[in-house]
Image 1 (tube, helix red, strand yellow):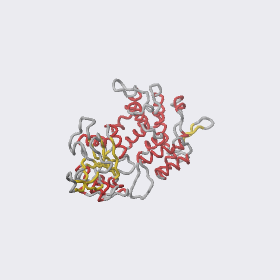
Image 2 (cartoon, helix red, strand yellow):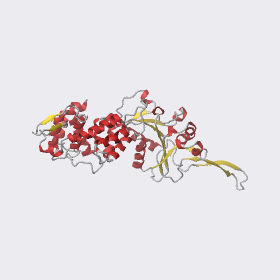
Image 3 (cartoon, one colour):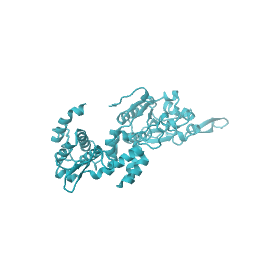
Length: 405
């Protein structure tokens, strides 16, 4: 499930996990009321996953940025309280902060985001929250304690403590976590996960040009390197902004401007070049009219209607393989029982790698896509029972060695 090759150096900040493993891990921590710390690079989706899990299981998220607090803000403002009816003697007690869950709060994830950005003294005070479920002597989190089972009653108080933040090696203004604080909770490190991001992107209106580019260049989803000193680099969060900025934009220089300012000059320019090469693609109507002779991506049509093959790199700098992936994605989005054989005739001319991408995308849109606006009506492709579509069986027969490698 993890499919990760890791060593001691890559595990400095917890066991490396992909999104599916993190979701499973968080689910178990909810069931056992145990705290967890999620490490990961900026913009990788740590907070989004916490909110996703909370929504799925009916928990309210109370998000606290301890980096914005002083130690007294965390512990609470002190005031004196009489210890007898005559108020002849007093004790100093601490008012809990406004974000502190009280009795009757119901199901809550107390999310201490950017925990490592807090100063050492604030981490020292705040470190009691996940470990002892309290601040000071009197302010205790309601509901079951650490290691106790999640209540069956959905209205019962149940507070889970989840922390998240960037490693101190990422130049994110963090404070190195004290060893005794770190020993108080579980640690995982979220790694870039292209497949999970692609599924999220398709269901969240991310521009199809961004999705196909990441399909062709999975390493471009996240190229952050804390040692190279760049301020701008690619992340899931910055690609989401690219999608917003280029929505409805077709001018290549404007696309280049937006992309380079969000994900860096190298990746942004390459992305803009791919967008510029879309004009070299055949339309779906052209493919459906003559799949065996329709021009391939990167080919042009002369006045005598003779196809002329361009070099591996087109005149605008776009790699031809990128255009093949774009056209495979475009066709997959509209594949159904009536045109699958026609599209397969065309895709078969593009090579095994593109065949696999097309078939995987058809499978996703037919069986896994959750957005009804993007699902394709193709139950015959890979049914739960009975025989699959002939094209699917032919694809599997031709590519079984590559898929099992």
